[in-house]
Length: 411
Ligand SMILES: Cc1cc2nc3c(=O)[nH]c(=O)nc-3n(C[C@H](O)[C@H](O)[C@H](O)COP(=O)(O)OP(=O)(O)OC[C@H]3O[C@@H](n4cnc5c(N)ncnc54)[C@H](O)[C@@H]3O)c2cc1C
Image (cartoon, rainbow, N blue to C red; front, side):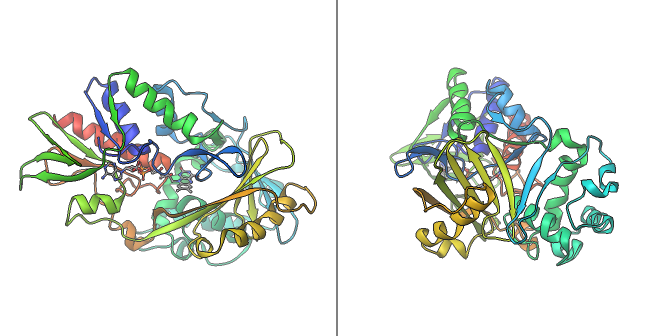
């Protein structure tokens, strides 16, 4: 296994569960890739590189957590409930999908998002028939209350792209697998303490307990495919591993690294940024909880104990601004959303992930490669491979499971 991000971890756990001997080679000193936690010395709290929202319907994430004995890692409300706050109008509402697969609750005006009409929701079903060239805007329209209060925040959160560029074909599978299965599948979940202690470390500990070797600071520099046959060797700094019959390689690295290792591989080339702003609050809050924010810079506000963290996705322009300016712009929105009244800017940390995900536009989605390669013992995994899902933890983990199944069938 090359790469210990969420795709690599899911793949390694699946292979190990099925009795395969696995060695994980990770380039950095830690696992988790784009999911990581660290203790920030400015706000003096453990924070994640970025808030990660998981839904109860994310089956691969929950299966992984169960396998590694971390079933209590995620927390969230007992029923699906998404509070929203409109920074322009000051309105608050809660999006609470109904229990069944058919959204009967949309027929009740009081259950709908304020200002939206039934016809707008009906129009949303056009996403189900999106073709590969469609953007979200080309299916649901460019304006209207439902676009502003649902389709835009949902698209930006799920696809890390604005509706006018985001591939509609990736949004519908998420709606089908979560909202389409009723509220039990769309309960919001976040890591209890952080991504590191709750999602990543339990996987690494389980792998080590079950005989898997995990080698950190072990970057794959080259691999030697024999034309038309199979991968023959792996080359690390100062070390070469020759592969024998029955050995298989899963490459679970980001697209740029994969294309450097496998010249000629078609991969998505563009990426989109996500910016997170973490603020130390004056006092602890009950929670954790998540609020969707409309009409400002902030998009989602996550509160855990005395830390408020704001996520801004599709944030390439924002990521170019100085951290001080970003904090000064976002903090008043946090104060309003949490009813704190005007407060001086507290200690904060801005984390810019300039390549948070690949650019999930129709043309880039068309460049996603399959898990299989032309070599008989080499498979690809990662959120950028052709999972049919957006670049999320769930997509990354499903890609890892797919690669594991191919590897087990072949060797
Ligand atoms: C700020 C932010 C917010 C996000 N929010 C959400 C969210 O709310 N919900 C959600 O589900 N998803 C979210 N995501 C997306 C999610 O984090 C990713 O989809 C997922 O973590 C991708 O996992 P991966 O294993 O495919 O890739 P990566 O995490 O990139 O893992 C690849 C691994 O390969 C290693 N590697 C690279 N080159 C080599 C080499 N040559 N040799 C060995 N190892 C190598 C890397 O060090 C890394 O550990 C967010 C992402 C970011 C950045």
